[in-house]
Length: 186
Image 1 (cartoon, rainbow, N blue to C red):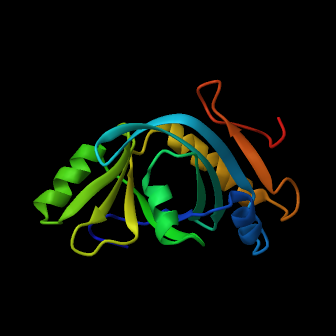
Image 2: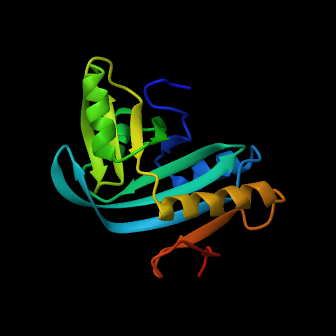
């Protein structure tokens, strides 16, 4: 566990084909995957506002979450940048919860002398940072809020009770304002 960031809770893989990536992990007994298709998702990339489209799938192996992300469309992001450099896909980030707000964590890192740049954000809930001196696998800082906790609990329970076969890919629906599991086709 890092004294700077705390426990890593997620490995984030950027992939060219999310269906193939989920099949890869499912064949290794990791699942089920809970998938979201986000359209016009607001964020900032290198300080510029964007609306991204992406597909993301989440599963657990024990206490470690596996995320697969497929960027969709022409809008530049850290995900599409990663695929340009690594067309086969791979580990793009490690995620940690912040003890407070994202800004408090960023301030703490600066005070510790860390030389990083904020590459992509989603409001005050997520920030992807990279080392200026040693760029590579990014760190995703996540605000530990009620909705993210609820979503992660749903995914964790699904993994803990999964028989390895039934509904290996499911959908997360946020239309009610809270995460609800639905069949993939719904």
